Length: 187
Image (cartoon, rainbow, N blue to C red):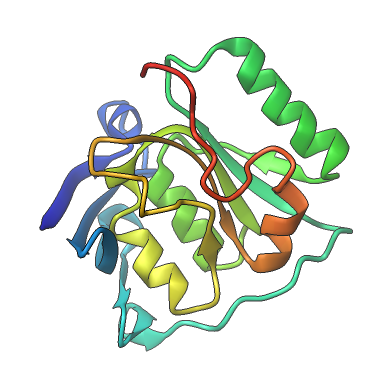
């Protein structure tokens, strides 16, 4: 199944910002296996998936690993209906318990590009739609980035509570977003 998100970051797009992208992912046998992301205003084209090395504008992307706690940064994204208390608890965890700074750009796809490029160490998404990840996860997987999404219990209409990053990042945020965590809210 081809999963197309014509504009991830619609609010940013409508307001004239550059933090939006077009995302096309291939979902097969219950998991995302291939992706293409195009961020036109940033002139970035990412492609990759199972058996296909990930590229940025035709150049191989570098493998990612580790977590430098002295400058750790985390992208965060919240669906608009996520309660304020859960948003604040997530940010408190990132800042206090994990000892990281955070970034919020309003587009899961753009945030995951930032993970791929090493601009942040990982991403926490709460209430994100599964289609927001379809293109990015196969690209990221090829460069050593993993996620906590359990695709055996996730379908195309799921709203997710997940983390994505290096294994070291996932270990740092495991207390708040363990593998296969469920949202537990109607979104």
